[in-house]
Amino acid sequence: MKGSSTATRGESFRAFLSHRYRSPEVNEYFFRLFAGLATPQFEVDKGTIATSVTRLERLVRDADAFIGLYPFPSDADPTIDRLRAESRYFRLELDLADRAGKPAIAFIDRRYGAVLRPPPAMIQVRFRAQEVVPDIRMPGEAEFKLRLAEFCSRVEAARRYSLSRALVQGGANQGWHPSAA
Image (cartoon, rainbow, N blue to C red; front, side):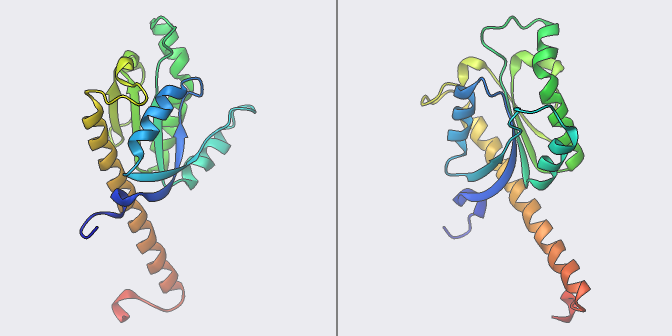
């Protein structure tokens, strides 16, 4: 489609996915919202071995973007201690994403409140658990899609910037410079 960004045509990019494995309905809901906007290829920490911050840093650094999906367990009482315990790993991954400087978006269950606060540069979308139902269009979905489109635009811009830097640096290493073209 003429004049549209590549991200809106289903651009593929690598994204580190920070999420809760035991919330497949939330993961599926947001994955469905990506359809038509982009095709993220997810890198995940499988969680089958001990946490290695170095391994996580590498996964985040090597991705084009960071996506966080942070539901609160529906069977849990949202006490401050439980909120802190449930968000412990999320907070670590948000910090790693911030340090990596990649385009990032975090969908966060409103019940986390101030316990789970992404850095200011990260796109943040708060949701109500009852609004995240697979195969049903919910009232907040329009806002979710707008924020996803903004995120996809940031990813596309960051990828273009990285590519242009690589071309200039590669050309400089070979005696070529853009002004000589």
